[in-house]
Length: 347
Image 1 (tube, rainbow, N blue to C red):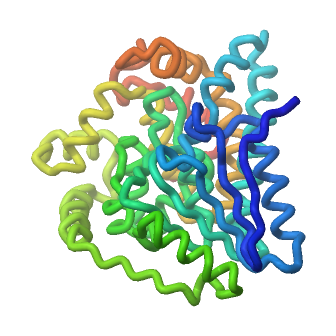
Image 2: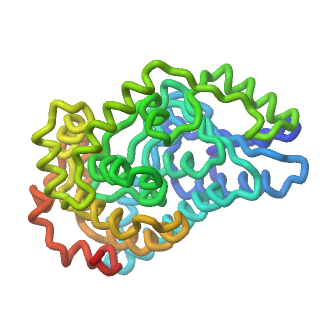
């Protein structure tokens, strides 16, 4: 019998979905994805429901991302690369379909994040019509630490503003605070848990999300924006990945760069290079277009040994760093990256 990994509740015009897999920080395994898909479909089909609200039962995490540990362990049991690709594709097809369902929802979706919002969790969050979080929320796409790359359409939603910001977040995998996420435009409002409940009551009474009073006045926002702006302006739009890494090293007194350097010390050079190439080739595309490409890229990346190696080291053995295939991004063969990406290089 499948465990119930989320709960649903209808109050007036509001359909609430709460992720409830606390021991795994709401990591998205196949069972949770199937239940989330069904819960969203039920809310969309109910004519009395005007708004969908998605959050977590536990404040520690909205969603830590995809259940990559379970996926990696399953991949180990597959005898061929083709079998590995097929298994990974089955997982990603469902995850990406849900991301796109939220992105293109027939009814407005409000997401309220508390705690960890990483990887696939950020993917769920990013597609909502109204993106809210508490001060405890943290956001990251940390896939370079497990030999993978930021997927779930991040090459779209992270690069919608200044693409340098999105690409830098992706190749560094650093964690943003809730205030930073608001300052950088990834969050629409920073609210308390109590105020979230007040908003739910208003939505239950029939108000539309666009009618809610969301006013985030926070003295931290402007200094954080300026801090990030100062760093980003040093990254040349025509620069190479190596150029960016050197600039970060030369300007390590800037806090975003200092955090990135720490992350690169333990991350996979192969993943950093793959992420740079993927984000470059997907820049300007819709999220739907990016997700279609990622079904291919993700399956190929999972068949590559770096992913299982990274998950084994970081999530199972709890090592600070895996024994990666390459120590420098300059050593990663472009032919390997082209084979995983299966898309033409940017001219």
